[in-house]
Every structure is written in C-alpha cells, then in structure tokens.
Image (tube, helix red, strand yellow):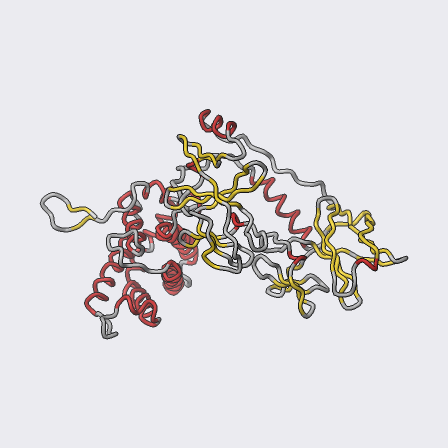
Length: 450
C-alpha cells in the first residue's frame, strides 16, 4: 500500500504481474473486447440491482458463524460501521466492474483485494478461507444472471445471452485473480498460448473416447491367459497378475470368481490390494470403494472398474482378455509445431541427470521426484529452501510425492502418516520409522540431490 505525494489517501496495488496475469486468464477463458462491450451495454441494468446484490452478499456472510465473526465486535454484535465500510467498497467495485473498462489499474486492484483476504495482505491478522471467497463470487455471478434475465429476457434475449456470457467469463477471471493469493503454485504466466493446437483432431479423439465409453466398439477376439491353479486361490483370497502391462486382481469370493482392473478410477491407486469387507473393496490410497462383484464405484454407480471374464476348468483358473478395436480408425492427434523455445532452456532440459531438477520448475509448496542411485527421492520446496527424503513411506511404502504438505511435514496419501522433511522424523503415525534424508545442492538454475 502506497501514498501519493501530497495526499493521505492510500493507493492499493497488487503484484507487479497482475495486469499480465489478468490478460493471460482473460485470453484463456475467452473473454474478449466484445464481451467487455456487452457488459458496458448492460451497465445501467446492473447499477439498478447493485443495492439488492450487495444486500444479498452481506446477508449471506452474516448468516454463517465463520464469516459473521469477521464483522462482529467482541460481544458478538455486528460492527455496523465496519459493515458499512465493506458495503461501500463492494458497491464501488461493482460499479467499476460494470463500466466495462479492465485496464492495468483494475487488474492490480483485483489482485490487491485477493491478497487482502490472506496473510499476504497489509494486515497479516486478516485471513478469509478461500472457500468463502469462491462461494461469494458464485453468489454475485448468480445474482447478475438473475438481474439480466429479469430485465432483458422478454424484449432483448440476444443481449441477455451476450451479457450473461460476458459476465460469466469475467467472473472466472476475477475468481482466479482473487484465488491466486492463496497458493504459491500459481507462477507468472505468459501472455499468450505458445503451442498451436488442431481442435479438429482433439475433437475426433474426444468422440472416439465417448463411443468407447458407451460400448461402441466390437470385440474381435479374446485372449485366454492361465493365471493360477484353482487351489492356489482359496475362497476369500486373491491374486494379482499382469497381462501385457495391465495389472489385474483375480478374486475368489463366496464361491464366485471375479477379475478387476487394479487401477482406481480416482488416481490409479492399486485398488485390488485394498481391504475387502462385505463384498466391497476399498482402495488403499484415498478410500474409494467398489462392489467386488461388478466393479461399480459406490459414489457413482455409472462408473466402474474394468472387469474380465474368469473361467475355472480342470483345476486351472483362466482369464479372458478382450482384444477390442473401434469401428473407425484410431485417432492420432496432429502434432503442431510449437513456437520457438530459447536454446538455453533446451540445453538445460537436455543436461539434467536423474538426480537433478530445474529450480524454477519446483515452486514453493510443491513436491517433485528424482532418482538417486536407482532409488526414488521426494524433493520439497519449503518457502524457497529445498529438502529431500526417500519417496517410500516407512509404514506401507506409499508414494510421498503424491501426498500433501502440512507446514514442514509431508503427508503420505495412503494412510496419512506425516514426516518432517527437514530431518525425516515422524510427526504423525501410523508410521513409526523416520525417513532417510538427502542433501540438496543448488548450482545456478539446477539443483542436485546427493
């Protein structure tokens, strides 16, 4: 926050990259000058509804204890003076937005507002959880759509459609500008797309995926694979097999035989090694559950694991693996020529070894993965400092690089064990053994794990 010479009024500014980021996101979502013009055309309509919109906005915040406390005095009563101040700011922001001018000052102000809701703002004591920001932007977006519909639907439906589209796209950009203050993962983006894409080939691929999803393919043959002797898999037991690189779990359950893909629909976890209770198998990574007998996901019965026919004969267990082809020719994406990349960046990529990574590509709060003497090592960026530990959790060998960070702790995605990345010590079980740690050496733009 700055003050101009000879003035006491503060000037609020966001990050230096705010204008660039605003333009980048506007291009990404497809917000154009025509959209800005549609907003300007409906300015007077939105002005008419601003008091109603501001009232809805703050009525919602005051209705829920976590957000009401922001406007409450110590005794619990609403601080009306502060509430009026916030209403004044929101009114001005909506009027400014409805004017349809989105210059660098506007982008910087929106970025400043986002920071002000977090500890990155001028007052580090203020923190509004991101979920409430998302919810309130949605409330504004819906209220604007209702206002446009009420005023334009009967007489000017074409303008209603153009303005609704414009406001929806603009709100996407504003939401991202507000939300980026909550994460260090959002780096500075370029001003434009740097790779040419052929939409036609992507569309054809999407059509083919849809057709496959609804079964619009023909099976030309089945490959039969022997997986075990019947006696090897007792009732209530299972066996994992791999056929042409595909992992499959074969189950003997209550006298029946079932074979399911060993890849959870959520993030590809090894679902077939999970706990089976009452005919339901639970993925050990994130707890997604499936019916063992039909592969259906309990959260969404329309989604299911791939299943394979099982046949038992002569004391042997066989799988029938369908070899499928689509009715049309397979679609290959047309590879377009990317825009030139700086030669220095290309040489950096080419000279990286298995135990090295580019410093600029592992942002604060991110977890990377390298290899040291054939062993996977997780690398963490904590506020600009790099730490490295073994990637396998000491409890059940879960992949730590797929987990989350809690302060200085890295959390295993399988069973929630937490370790301090600085020294490998256990912060939270069920793990009881510390991680091995490694030294990270930074030399210029490249870091090396030793």
